[in-house]
Image (tube, rainbow, N blue to C red; front, top):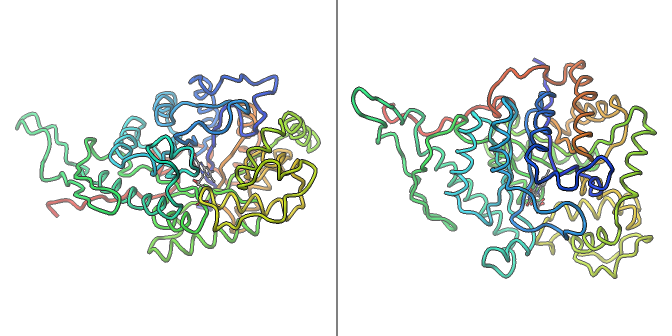
Length: 441
Ligand SMILES: Cc1cc2nc3c(=O)[nH]c(=O)nc-3n(C[C@H](O)[C@H](O)[C@H](O)COP(=O)(O)O)c2cc1C
């Protein structure tokens, strides 16, 4: 079969554009309404998309003045969506810095059972000091330490998921034997960050391990992805950068002894779609006009580790900015933003407009045909195995993508016309982890 795209719907409140909530069509409180997400999930499933994805951080992100804030916890929300859908994968973000492996391994194994094998975990280290202050700390642990903890966290989680052999539960009524104790293998983990006896209190789940996603693109982020990730979400602005990232990550996966095809790389795209290009550009323009620059400027200053007074809306970024080495929060996003501003010589106002669309993800305005071409171009040229679709406005942006772009990709033979598989791993063409070898073997 020819290589096919993997498409994930990254859902965010009423759209990825920070001003989407101000459009006449948007309900500013929709992000607290489970029916809003049920509707989005069903649209994505109608389009045969591989998966849905919810971002998260254990902190109140940004100022509440700015955009809809304070959302539902993703694994809770995805549990509700599991009951409202049948095939689509369900990926939740959870932090390795501010959780314990036993809790999270249990939660994702549970979601995998509840959904019949459709759970995925976006493993993040959580950038910024604000979240740290919610967890008994004065500041965030160093970037390197957060990633070292993340690696051990995933190791422990995998031990826990494998602590039951697939056939440990017997339910043998005749002999009065419910399960086979010899098929339970406690984690017995003692490491630098965690001490976990195991076994998990959930039997092995349909996928064995939920799909693992990684979304940090710093050196440490890429190392973690190469070792563990089944899929990688990434923000890339240019074809050349995306190709370099793609080649680098596939090479690193090979060096880890993995088949590079089993690591799916999915850059984000924020498509503003219109029946003509002028209509698409007008939608972008309408959204940009609704941005309140004073909020956005404060946020940009925080990302760049500057005092807001150092930024002027109608000037370019100051020359003297910190190196990526000095950034302890989100390293790769910092570099992307600075490079975007410098490459295109954007004023702060223009940069804010670009970031308002997708926080550094690639924005693209065009007709359905042009969006399909943009997707295919990166897919055919070693830059992507698929895309994270980040509709600027929800539900309308996802609806138009599913109804008008997906059929073009299907006609080109680039995307499935029906689900032919059941689990999320199957949708992504990935094997089910074997787990512990049978004790009788
Ligand atoms: C598509 C995408 C989604 C992300 N979602 C989250 C998220 O939900 N929560 C979070 O803390 N970080 C999220 N991140 C950020 C990364 O996981 C990471 O924390 C950040 O890029 C810093 O990592 P780095 O220093 O390795 O670049 C996301 C990144 C991408 C590309």
